[in-house]
Image (tube, rainbow, N blue to C red):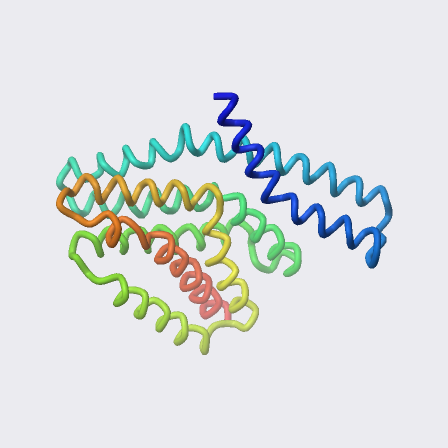
Amino acid sequence: MFSKIKDFFREIILTIGPIIFIVTILQLTLVKMPWMMYLRFLLGALMVIIGLTLLLKGLKIGLVPVGEMIGSAMTAKGSVTLLLFLGFLIGFAVTIAEPDVMVLSDHVSTVSSGQVDKLMLISVIGIGVGFFILISFLRVILKIPIIYILLAGYLTILILSFFTNNNYLPIGFDAGGVTTGPVTVPFIMALGMGFVYSLGGRSQTSEGFGYIGLASIGPIISVLILGVIFN
C-alpha cells in the first residue's frame, strides 16, 4: 500500500512540479513578489501535493469501487423510474461535494458582493449535473446516439445565451468546467461503467463513456436559466 502511495506522490510531484518551476523562474526574473509570499506559495504547493496524493488514493480504494458497485446494483430492481431518480440524486450529491464547485461559488459570491448566493449556485450546479446523469442513463436504456443529446444540449445553451443575464453567462461556462473535478469525474465514470456492465450485451466503449461530457452541459444550462430568471 505504501509503495502505491509513493507512486501517487511521484505522479503528483511531476504534475505540480512545472507550476512550481515556472513560478520560481518568474520570482527570480519578472514578478519578484515578497519572499514571504513566495514561501507561502511553496508551503501551499507542498500541502497540495500531499492532499492530492491522499485524495487520489482515497478515490481509488473507496469511491471508485463503490461507484462501480452502485452502478451495477441500480439495475437489479428493474424500475426505470427508480434508476433515473437515483442517477439524479447521485449526480447532485457528488457535485455539491466537489471542491472545484465550492471554489467557484466562493469566488462568485465574493466578486458579486453576495448578490449571487453561494448555496444557491452550488445547488443549481448540482441540479444540472444530476439531471444530465439522468439523461445519460436514459440514453443508454433507449439506445440514443450521444451526438443527438450533445447537439440538443449545446443548441439549448446557444439559445439561452441570448436571453440570460450577461453576468451569468461566463459563470455558466465555468460551472461546466468545475464539475469535471477530482471527485466528480472518477465517481461518475465508475458509476457509468458499472451501470453499462450490469445491463449486459452493451458496448462499454460507446455506452460506458460520455457521462462526463454530458454532465458538464447540465450546469451551463442550469446557471444560464438562473440568469434568465434574474435578468
